[in-house]
Length: 225
Image 1: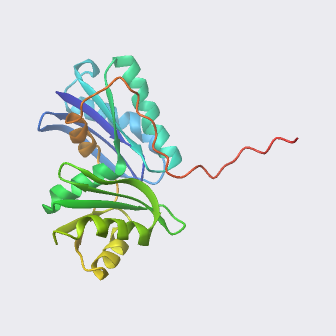
Image 2: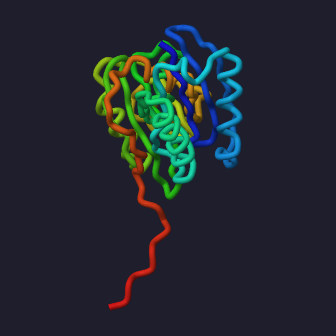
């Protein structure tokens, strides 16, 4: 089963084509802006490298967030358009799960947490085990996020893999609580892991929606009475 996956939600733009366990093509570029201009050429590039036509695909996948407001919308809009054009199922995967699953694979840990700096002293955080979601994505103060992770992982004394831009600060607090943790270099989702997760997910007819954990700062002016 061939899967095309993309991510534009955080500090990178990536695309990948997966066929079963075979990685047919993969691109990953760190970038803070410019996702809208980079995505379509990147998708064309991986499709050429995979030697596939869009009609050869069986499934599509995209990160839903949490992430930047604009970045989330870029990937979602692009893949929703492909979903309509190709009449294929589109699977939504959170940015935090994609990072955490990659961290588990890299380290061999049984648990992984992704913690992404959300500014204002807060983080986007989630915790995963091999086959479970132990803490769904939330927006929390860093200390509260680490305490939640500690409460759900401390019983076995296992090593915790950490991913995300707030991983180093989280490790310091987690170790102070008595845990063992290893920080990975993963600070943004890779579309390859989005594809791998999507390949194991049962598709539905539902259209993925952006996962916004913080409302946008912009507000419409209040209507006068």
